[in-house]
Image (cartoon, rainbow, N blue to C red):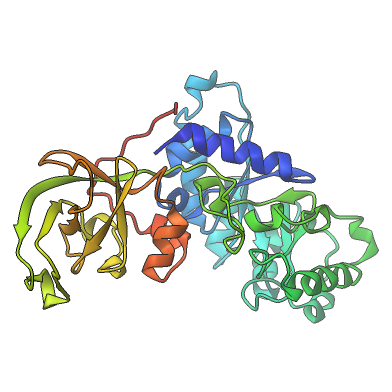
Length: 361
């Protein structure tokens, strides 16, 4: 994993943002390890982090308590931590308050749970079209907001990966209308709107705090648009464990789902779905061997995969490495072959492979 690329992607997102820029590090830093991810982002002055659950927020706080930034000088203040999923119980509210975690209030129940701690900062989320988390505009009037220390009001874009989608304008209009329903005593609250894809939309979709996620980790924020502006962060390589010459008209792998049409030179690579390689890459995915693409044939199994290297100018020998994800094969391309999205590919990477974190290119 290239931490320098991660940091560069954050800097690019911050430069594209109209206001401040957070780093979304939920799900263990999108499956890549929250400690190295947060350290890299903090090293380029990220001061706001977003997580989904209380346990993630507490883990982030613990990283600071354990001297996460010692190598950066140890002088940086603890960051602002936004708990996107909000509160699930009175105990959770008390724990969040004790750790100075800023919950996102998504409904009447969460707002009531935060009432004993209402003088501490919280963010209000308004649902403008995701039908997921956030207040419905008509429920805003049901809360007596006096005494609540709201630091921000936010919403989440559903279709920002498609710049021409009409939902983008609809959500912006709904957000503006809902904000007018809040008591004037709350003042002109800062806003947070943009995710990664939103950062690539015009500034009116950004708000005062953008919240990029997948873009930080090398995924294309707007995957309908060619040319990924983000640097590759994750590099997944597998080692050749055996070479085989397979005759024509021979079945390969489980279920005999692939039958050779010619004599085929195959590299059996020690990487499978136990390592996070999507099984849906069976007979559809590719690898890169020194810049040359080679197809995956047969089914991806738990520990190995077959690669047809017949047309590779210099086929890899036993012990050599092939790229499944990296500079030549992007995470969004892998996701397309697997019928999913880049976020699921990253979050699904296993812990069995050896993980290396590089701070330089």
